[in-house]
Length: 401
Ligand SMILES: *Cc1c(COP(=O)(O)O)cnc(C)c1O
Image (tube, rainbow, N blue to C red; front, side, top):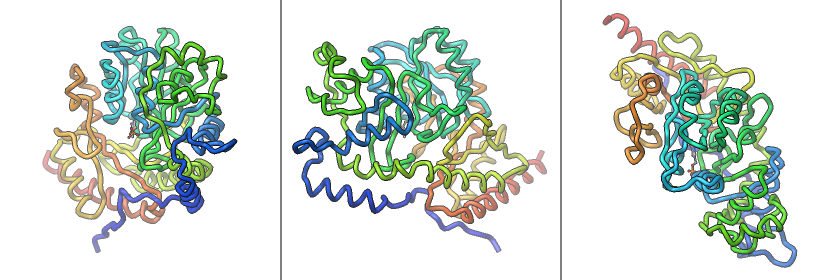
């Protein structure tokens, strides 16, 4: 009997009842705007910022309209200007180079290793070209952060972390987002907490965060922030910083607060599913699993493997055969950008030189969402399907050689 998987790869869990009740209360109040408070009321958005700062151990936190907005704000607050170069990952998603382009800057792409992290040797070679690295912890894979920070510190390069896939994750016990000058997060539906759209910016620099708060559109109401630097920090910054509105509202904050409280438990559920997939795919001929270093405390909201050095037609055959059995896989090696998947050479607004070593890895990356609506039994079934189809195509390849 051929097993078929019936689940939906894009179906997230519902918003917790507590979040729905809190959202209803905000709607009943009519005070959705974060600065619209009554008496000594504290806005949901300001409370969420305090709670998020405490969760990651940051001094300051700003809730914003999207992860992309968090990144452009961080770049602006770091002083990145029109025409500047910004180092970033060749293996990431479109909002990352997009954030760099949004401030008129130019990405300098750094390669990806077979472990799906930034290539630190390539980074070392290119560090002299820019003052800022926008580091994407793409698909939740975290590089050797001690080595990365030592390289960047020595070169005087500021690090902004894109933690869209690492909310709740850490390297060697230090939360992702706490290594660099700024950490940026997304609360878009497919990330670790879900408000449809939304994001956070965290950091410890008082002037950095004062600038970010002004940029986000605080008018002269920055005193209403709680996870924020003292009012005196804004003395000059309030005159010098343009308002580029991208605030979060109380409705989103209300549904995020209970989800944030549940983040660690959700991370454990994701990782249990990940391990089932990993076990089910272990030692599949032709398939390379991504090693997870001991120092990396990841949150597996997605799953990747490599079909390294496979012919494109063979990878396409695997994808088609899995799709026919209900398993939706994405491929970073396709000639055309598709769905959420694109790569450095599809962002034609940004110049790039060919990166053969990274192209080899990208051509082999197969990517899968792992929504929590899947059970561990679902994951075991998905692994059986992938294993069978990869093996079938691989055997045919080997026989043809
Ligand atoms: C989702 C995502 C972001 C932020 O996206 P928004 O949709 O702007 O919230 C940033 N980086 C990566 C790698 C992402 O996947």
